[in-house]
Image (tube, rainbow, N blue to C red; front, side, top):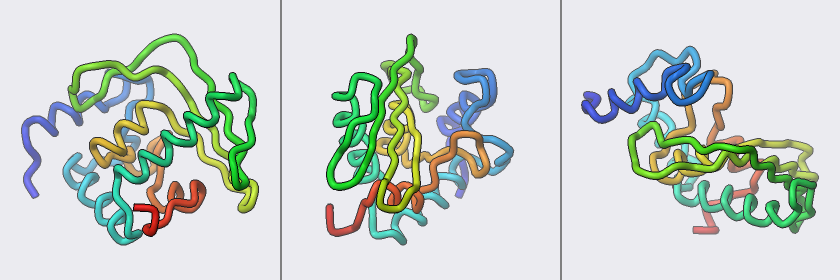
Amino acid sequence: MKQSPELSIAQTNMRPGVITLYGFLGPDDRNLIDMLIDDDGDVKRLGLTHEQIGRRMEELRNQGAKGLGEYIKVAPHFQVRVETVRGKLPCPFGEPGLHRKTNTQVLNEASGREVVYSDLQIHLIAEHGFYQGRKSRFRLNPADLAEVLEITAEEE
């Protein structure tokens, strides 16, 4: 599929040093449209939606925020810690508004697996279906998110 001019601008914004030090793409040199299509296919094969994944991430972030920077138990078997640092980041897709620099760390005690994500990543997944480039420093794999956060198709 041909990439639109808007997605080309977004891809430029995702390069290292534009919005963040490391950028959002890593060594992935595909067009942004191809990254979005591939991840969309992965999410559909899981029987999920990007919005559903984003909602679960946000839900755990909101629960974890009650811990005031310390780990808090979230049923049934999660430990969640939310930390916020000064500053905000814009969406590389050019949407208005800024996203707080909040990191959420979720440990699934049943599996022993953990995931860390930011408020901007919640937005990028829920609104744009963007999980970052393959092998990028902060990529969130849809299947890993679904497994660690225990998101199932039945929840929708």
